[in-house]
Every structure is written in C-alpha cells, then in structure tokens.
Amino acid sequence: MEIFVVPDAAAIGAVAAGIIAAVVRSKPDAVLGVATGGSPLPVYAALAGHRLDLSRVRAFALDEYVGLPAGHPESYGEVVRREVTERLGLDPGHVRVPAGGAEDPERAAVEYDTSIRAAGGIDLQLLGIGHNGHIAFNEPGSALDSRTRVETLAARTREANARYFGSLSEVPERCITQGLGTIMEARHLLLVVHGQDKAAILAEALSGPVSAECPASVLQRHPHVTVVADESAASQL
Ligand code: GLP
Image 1 (cartoon, helix red, strand yellow):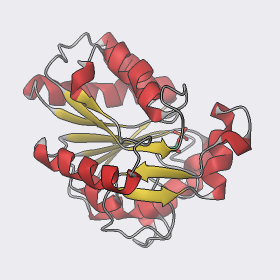
Image 2 (tube, helix red, strand yellow):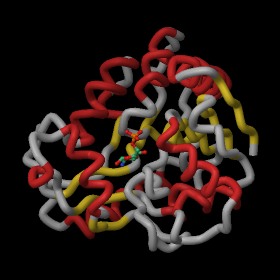
Image 3 (tube, helix red, strand yellow):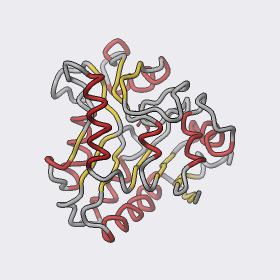
C-alpha cells in the first residue's frame, strides 16, 4: 500500500488526478470506478484541468439510492452526471450508475455486477470512506466478499448525507451498492480522505484488524492500493 500525505483537499485532488491521468494516458479506453460524496470532488476538478481525451473512457459508479424519483438532484445518477460526466467530458453512454429506480432493484444490482465484469473489470476505482468505515454503501457488517446488492443504510450514514437533502426524512433508507468483493476486483484502488473527522476511522481501516465491522479494512488485502490523505486525516496513522 502506498500512502501520500499532503497539506489539504486541493493537494489531494492534484495527486489523485495525476494518478488517474496516468492510467488514462497508458490506456485510453480505461474503465474507471467513480465515487460520490464530498471527498472526490477536488479530484474531478483537478482531473478536468488535465484536459485529457476521455472519449473512450468508461465509468461505473459505486452506488445509488433506491426509491428517489428519476432526475432527483441528489440521486447519484444526477450527481455523477453533473460532477463527473459533464465536468470531464465523458460520453454519457459510457457512464453507468446502478438503477436505483428499477422495479426490481435486487435484479438491477445483479445485472450491474455482471456489467462491470462484461466491461473487463475496473482499472482504477476511486473511493472515499464514511465515518463508520463504509466504502460505497457497504455498512459495518457487510461480508468482505459481498457482491452488488440492495442494502439498508446505517442511521449514521443517513444523518451524514442529510446535508444534501432538505431533511433527514427525505434521505432514502435503501441503496444499491457495489459489494466489497466487487470493489476488490478493481485492479487499482485509490482512496482519498480528508479532514480530522476521518482520522480515527482511517487509522482503524489501514492498521486495525481486517473485519466486516470496518468494511474499509478489506483494502489491506488488496495488492494495489493508493491512499491520498491530508495531514489531518493522516494524523493517527
Ligand atoms: C457516501 C458514499 C460513499 C462516500 C462516503 C463518504 O455516503 N456512498 O461513496 O465515500 O459516503 O462521503 P464524504 O466523502 O462526503 O465524506
């Protein structure tokens, strides 16, 4: 595992974007795994500055809420469209997000998992980490070999994400998330972490026991992980 400790969020964006840009330069039709949440936003901003030709890049999002109306501004489909597809100039036909509005979300989850494999797997997966150690929406207790599936969000995750919605009651209770086993199949995992409030969970994930109680701890078993953290987030490493 390689760990870069940098001064602030902008520097996280610059370093992580440089890593992604190198992947795309060496493989113009790379398959990228993209993440939502606040942590990756500086990465997309910095990547846009590279002015790469991303026309052949394909992208898969990590997760999506179940039950939001189509086009809801906080659905990850919309967030990815705004922050990733449009910002980076990706072909919208090359970008997939789990179908949280599907009539049968369980089936949509299985199909999504299959579509990642059919695309040849993910070359580089960008990740954030939740305060309880979740990655994507794999909450504590998720099996380390889990696949893409429908999950119930932890109360703490709904509270954290209420900032994007009008109130806590508007935050969906369920989601479709790539599983930990699915994420572990990506060839390179790039975790970006920022802020003092993530310091304890980052230390637990990287140096505590590998356990479903801290889903991000599964990263310790991956052969190619890069962590880019600011000094606050890295303060307990
Ligand atoms: C969200 C997402 C995750 C993200 C995490 C942390 O709920 N599903 O993919 O990594 O929470 O978000 P943030 O970066 O805003 O702290």
